[in-house]
Amino acid sequence: MNSPDAGPLGRVPTRLGRVQDGFRDWMLSLAAPFWCRQALARPPRLRGAPRGAQEHLDIAGRPARPGFRRLRVQARLLSAFSLLAERGVPDTLPVAADIARFISRAQQPEGSWACLLSPEGRVIDPTSDLHDTACALQAFARFSRLGDGASGLALAHATLDHIERDMVHPDGGFRDLYPARHDWRHQTPHMHLLEAMLALHDLHPEPRWDRLASVLARLGADRFLDPFDDTLGERFLPDLHRAPGLEGEGVIPGHHAHWIWLLDRHAADSGEDHDDAIRRLDRFCLRHGVGPETALIRDEVGRDGTLRRGSARLWAQADLLHAQCALHGRAVRRGDLDDALDREALIERIADAMLSRFLLGRGAMISPPGAWIDVLDEGARPAADRIPAATLCHLVLAWNALEQLRPLDNDAASR
Image (tube, rainbow, N blue to C red):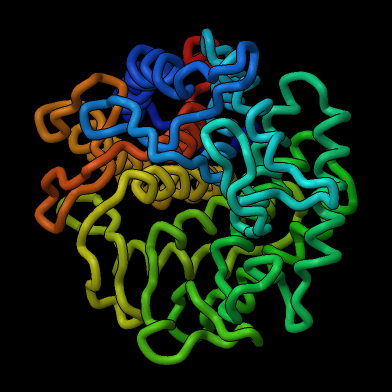
């Protein structure tokens, strides 16, 4: 993964060492060993067949076995274990390899991906869902960095052939589903497709995905991000105008955070200028989406910033941490000491909130260690009834971003 460039302030503020060490210890000593044991489903009846990843665990950390496997969940677990393996975390590569074998059963001959499988890997729903397909592209790009890059590139080209043949929309961007089931369009699948293009760039830069990444980045900055109120739309009409009425009012601050670090990465890869969009996304997110007393990111607000759902989910908290690490790097590169110190303090508060409320400590009440509380209610009390496995991907990405802020001479200690 790319690291922030060194700048006139040096590479990292020393006060972050405490939360970096706490997050690293949780990830390496608790989370990675626990999920290496629990991520894979029970052995299949057919010896040697891949097991695939758990959809979720119950609140006690036991496999839930819902009777299906969503492609996006399998893909996010493959991404998580591939990133852990790339960082040299023990026992993670075999888990990634098993999930890769299982998820390959979702690929269809024409390049599309089935969005839903049975626990045995049989296709339940062959619909091509852009969100799921983008997650699969991203996952195989990351997995291919560990070995067979050529097959990963061939898979990417076949998948993009399908997307560009069957899912392109005449009004820009892509359809949500193929075959189509509704006319609504959403920004989230495009967000994940941009993330997949960035992962493919990391694997092997090629004009095809670099061009598509630029198209998607501009779509996010120019069409999904409202020019008047700085809110990121979620649901759109076919022509990409914001959905009318209540359908278009909801704003998810966690998606603001996700787009911040994606646009920052794309700017670093491409040299394109996303400063204005990043600044606007961050301004709304911090002003209306993050509790000033708790540093918890809220699930949903309105376009005017009024609170709609005051609960807080761990995936969004991880994306907020990831975004602020990216913004700290931007401040360092331009020599802005005041902003860098402000970001440093916010990063510390966000990481502390994650560790104490979701991952460790009395506030989290985690059992078994290495699992997490996935959602807090409006009073910041644990409110989860399950442990979604896909959250691991957000946590690994956030941990990786936090580790990249370490001084160069401490990098080896973080691996």
